[in-house]
Length: 294
Ligand code: NAD
Image (cartoon, rainbow, N blue to C red):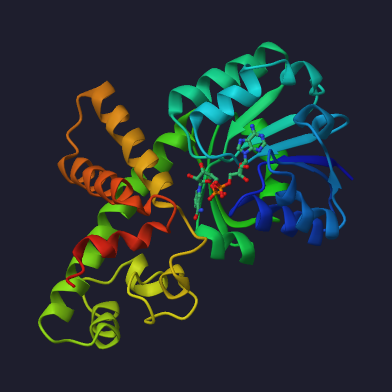
């Protein structure tokens, strides 16, 4: 039975780690905010005061942090890699720049440690249900070792290519998600401004050609879907600032290759305006607020 260190217990990390405990894994957990470890400790995990303490004796290290700077800070800012057993496997699940993922994987490799970038899709509901999609970059052998653990947190596992490829695929997906959420908010707002009931219009779109993930599972209009963040004051879920970060990553990837992403750039600007209006901590479906008329 492997020992797992799980670092980063926010909206995603907490339910993912809880699923590993449910599956019978031994976990040591760590988060910069001690209160974020309470739920896991109550479920049987060992709460570690430092990342170094968490990785001691771990066969598998999983991280789920906000952005590139947190991941680089953790793995490259100090001597954490020196405290990870060279036989251990590191599975980095945050959404970060492909370049950061490659840099951290190379530093791990230099110490003989295998590392995968394995960003996820499926949101907090997918994390809680254990139905996440993992989009993996790295070597075949490392993925074969990771698979049994990933299967305890997710349903679909894709091998996108070598180190960093998981992040590239994830960034493409999230750019599309940012565009489609803004588009869905725009369409619903237009319908409501013209006298339609948002639930009736959502039901129509969900069975018509404008149908998408937001209309099926994550409607941005409050009250249309009981379990969506929109119906809970846009609390929890996927923060607007995190979506802004991912659209920024798409911009960097486009810049590096001279690719055109006019809609992605527009969506990034909408999320930047939304954040500047003070909504950065709300779930990203709150982009609807940009369209609402008083
Ligand atoms: P979050 O902000 O809720 O959680 C991040 C956690 O990391 C926080 O608890 C924070 O205290 C902790 N942390 C930060 N730096 C740390 C460090 N050095 N050591 C230990 N803990 C540290 O974010 P989230 O919503 O859980 O998202 C995590 C990642 O997953 C992000 O990259 C995000 O883009 C991605 N993601 C999120 C969703 C979603 O629906 N929320 C979906 C798919 C992917």
